[in-house]
Length: 214
Ligand code: AMP
Ligand code: MG
Image (cartoon, rainbow, N blue to C red; front, side):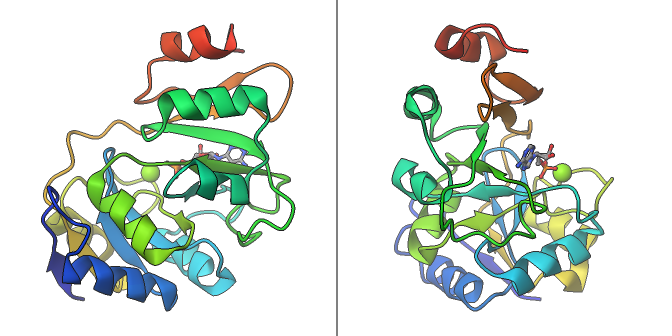
């Protein structure tokens, strides 16, 4: 499987990045760096592409995936934001925070990605390669860590190849990830905010925004 290098300091017009965006639009699996770890990217809009992600990782179908988008406008197409969610998103994105919110009506997201739930987990990543890839693909992307379920998350392109081999169609090599902590997952889909997973975003900062976390 091809490994294409991309300069993480200036990826926006990189030919390899555009090639990766086209591959994603064609339903291929593309591993790419985020500020946490390398993600196994696929079009969140496509049942077939999302199914391949679950298959490649050996991930149980009942464990939903995070949908990555380029910005808050992209997130609004996918999830229903109330005032509280908007405040949190504006304060913390781009960054290592995933919000669980009600699915937006007509959200262009495969039901496989959300495991059939009425909610969706959404995030705007901060890594320049991830951001520019999302902007070029013009699609929401699922991007769980690019490793078989239960294995350590990859922080380099070589690590992705060693872990997933031929299950991935293309690896975008933007250099090593800054040692990866996963995104914090905050559920704002009900009354009381619930921290489903602690991660890269400081919980105290979230509490200053939304009050005590359950
Ligand atoms: P990962 O396993 O690192 O890809 O992280 C995805 C995390 O987000 C898992 O803990 C999922 O259970 C959680 N998640 C994704 N979608 C939802 C959702 N709709 N509701 C609650 N948790 C979710
Ligand atoms: Mg993982």
